[in-house]
Amino acid sequence: MTTERYAPFVKFERHNAQKIHELSIERMGTISLSLAELCIRYAGVERVPRYHEQHRENDAEHSLMVGVLAIELANELRPELDKGLISQYASIHDFIEIRVGDTPTYSLSEQELLDKHALEQNALQELVDILPPYIGGLLVEYEEQLTPESRFTRAVDKLTPLLVDILGPGKMVMREDYGITNVAQLITNKQRLDDSMVRRFGEDTPEIVELYQYLGDVFTKEYINSQS
Image (cartoon, rainbow, N blue to C red; front, top):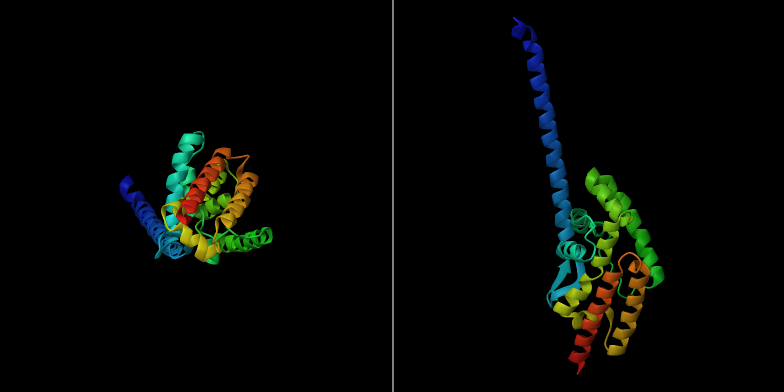
């Protein structure tokens, strides 16, 4: 008798739960498709560094490299940092470029860097409006550099063009993309970039700044040797 009395209510609850489940699955499907589309577009953003003469790195490849490097370097240099969070930041750290494309900073003036930042701030708001809440919040944290992990990830990000230039046709990139045709020009730009790294990251991540300078020296030596 008791079961019969409550049967309509139980049936209603099961039906309601099923509807909620279906709506949740539909929402997850929408989120999955939108993020997959963004990832495909992410992989279509071409960068300046080249893996070989015919292949420029894209943002998805670059983000994988940043993530792998950053978690291992954090383990070695800053074990107190959350490596899972670093990996998350790395995977989406250049999402803004889906909107604005990649702007190489190798030869930008201070004013051009400010203009780049303003353009990216506008793009950030546009992206946050369409991203799911967790990914959107993660991107804001990274762009605003709100955590030690976001600052560490950004510093490691600056290493990767040097690594790709050392391993790939870096001399060609210097000549064709930046107009660097001699050692004096290269050294002048290296000093400027080293100084910028110290200003931006010297306090938070001095070890990464030292590594950046070391890799710059490696590339410079290879460039000089290729000239002789």
